[in-house]
Amino acid sequence: MALLERAIARVLPAVPRKLVRALAAPYIAGPTLEDAVSVVRRLNAEGKLATIDVLGEEVSSADEARELARAYHRVLARVEGEGLDANVSVKLTGLGLELDDGLCRENLEAVVEDARVRGNFVRIDMEDSSTTDRTLRLYRELRAAGRDNVGVVLQARLRRTVRDVDGLDNVRVCKGIYLEPAELAHQDDEEVRESFRATLRALLDRGSYVAIATHDEALIADALAQVRERGLPRERYELQMLLGVRAARADELVAEGHRLRVYVPFGTHWYEYAVRRLQENPRVAGLVAADTLRRLAR
Image (cartoon, rainbow, N blue to C red; front, side, top):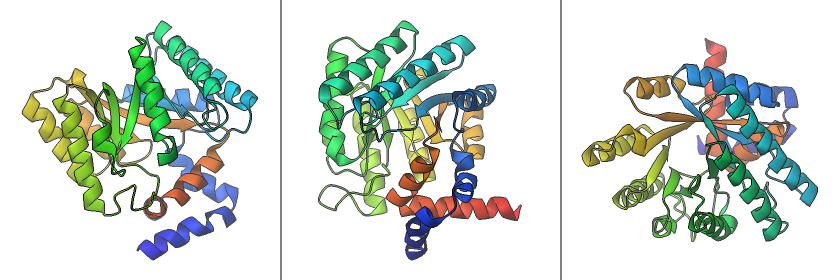
């Protein structure tokens, strides 16, 4: 299976864009903000929350970084205007992290302040390990400056993750999609799961608000057990899933009374996003291919 997954990931750049779009369609809202708004409306009607991500983290100029920041301002304005139950997720590379620290900080602070004024929230996504220290530093500095409407992400795949918990008050915990060398990241699936469990336990022990982002049933069960053991009210945690993945299970969790948030990416860079994400993690490519075959067989 692993060989097949890697083969699928390798040939993606040669696959026609129309076919990639068909493969990616269930997992990406579409190219426009209107597409994202339509998806979020549906999710809200199903009792689900959303976090909106504007695709386009690979920017090559300050102008592109500022334009992506402006796109987030448009998202926040539309969410407020429509009365949607949705926040936003940002990637710091899209805001200029690899171009200039000052530019990135300026863009991030502006988006966070806009969200604060509108009573909304910004989640800073975590990217590959080369950005981890800078991402956590910016998050901690914003929180120290009183910006309490901002959160961050920890990836259980990284060996350092449990040590990064201190001082983090609002965290999304996920396995992590980026493939990293063995000296930096767990390579075994069960080691990743155990890191996820330990990270969640450490965050809950320190009273952090935790967004539990996983489709792994064993981790969902363990997370809910930890929540029950602590007697946490539903306002102190949430579950998160990706758009188009395990929607029936998401419905069940909502029916059980849990807060569940769906990650909704949109934008004109959907093709680059789809190919890059599937290449970065061949296992995801295999899952998408299997899911597509199931849909075609119905």
